[in-house]
Length: 109
View 1 (tube, rainbow, N blue to C red):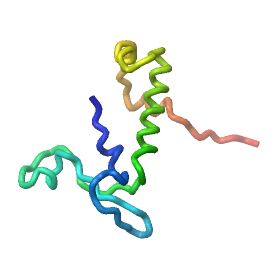
View 2: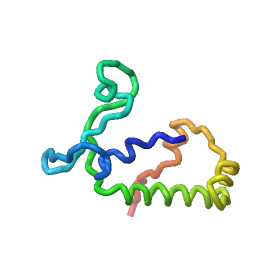
View 3: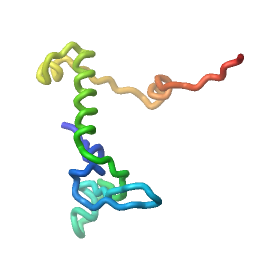
View 4: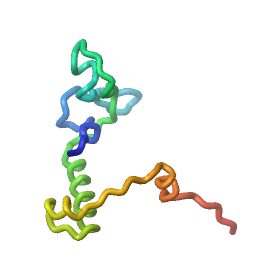
């Protein structure tokens, strides 16, 4: 199971009007556990705000599909069932993420 509501937020297919702020297009985003969705019930989860308008959902789905296909190729899986059996998730620290990111180095000419 994955939670990807924010990934689809701002696409043409999501509910809500598109509006302009300083020449940029936005849509209102409201997480399902947000106060505005659940009426008077206060919950700690969820966010309520604005996201940049993304246009059609098709390019977002294309990116998800490409990422999934790439991950499947890394583990040698031919289908989703095989992928769930072969995939191994490794917990990493924020330090690991910083060490593995790109860095700008100073070059002397």
